[in-house]
Amino acid sequence: MSFVLSPRTVEEAVGLLAELPDALPMSGGASLVAMKNARLIEASHFVSLAGIASLHGITATDTGLRIGGMTRHAQLAACDLLTGDLSMLRQAAGQIANRVVRNMGTIGGAVGNADPAADYLAVLACGDAHVELTGTEGSRLVAMTDYVTDWYETLREPGEIVTAIHLPAARPVPSVYRKLCRVPGDYATASVACASDGDGVRVAVGACGHGPIRSREAEAALRGNLRDPVAIAAFGAALADLADPVDDVRGTSEFRLRLIPRMVAAAISDLEGKR
Ligand SMILES: Cc1cc2nc3c(=O)[nH]c(=O)nc-3n(C[C@H](O)[C@H](O)[C@H](O)COP(=O)(O)OP(=O)(O)OC[C@H]3O[C@@H](n4cnc5c(N)ncnc54)[C@H](O)[C@@H]3O)c2cc1C
Image (cartoon, protein in one colour):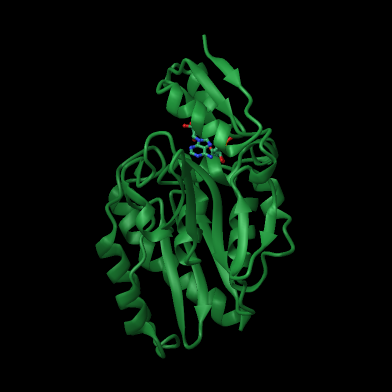
């Protein structure tokens, strides 16, 4: 049996998590409740973050956007602030699971859980996002490109929670999120987030390793060559070289390695069509 605690502030929530090492944070419960029912997790207490007002909503800051951890996928899928190079986040949110899960699940829970196939990870790495982590010692920002360290492992310390995602202000250039999945609503077999960046692109690949794959070196080599199929193929091959996919029910490792250059080329072609 697990008890649900309902703090009203972040300080109270992280205090409870520090006091009760066996407790887990709970956002929408979209995955947590399913994991509990399947007996995949045990916890004496769930610390619900739902009643903490400062974790809800999307606000403009001096440098861009702050998305509170309790922001639901459905809110992001309908968010007018996500334009230009941030529209890929809106596209990704709208492709998560189904309407029920999108109304329950949150960006803080998804990033906290860090499922390698989660749609947000590639988009946030491509978008130069930072994860705001808060514990009893205060808050810190971690670059999304550094955040995932291994399979389901992140720089988040025990007792810390994801309180927000920070993104630079939207730039008026196109972006695209491509997700290949077995049926609509499934987790990705592979995904690609791609945003224009002057005469180049920013690209991150998802679901093909423990975390999102991005190479600034490969992006620099592609700069100025977006109409050159050979350069694009070399770029896709460089990202595939960095991938470490597994064989699972959604596809084999070999299939995913073949997908990466094709999906990257298709995403770049989508962007060129939108310029
Ligand atoms: C049927 C189904 C299909 C899904 N399909 C997809 C999909 O296609 N694409 C996709 O990206 N996702 C998918 N998901 C995941 C879903 O989108 C949720 O976003 C995600 O699991 C997090 O849910 P939640 O926010 O309710 O977090 P919870 O379920 O409350 O928590 C999930 C985990 O994260 C931890 N946690 C929660 N909040 C925080 C926090 N603020 N900080 C740190 N840790 C935290 C919890 O302790 C728990 O371990 C699917 C889930 C289900 C149930």
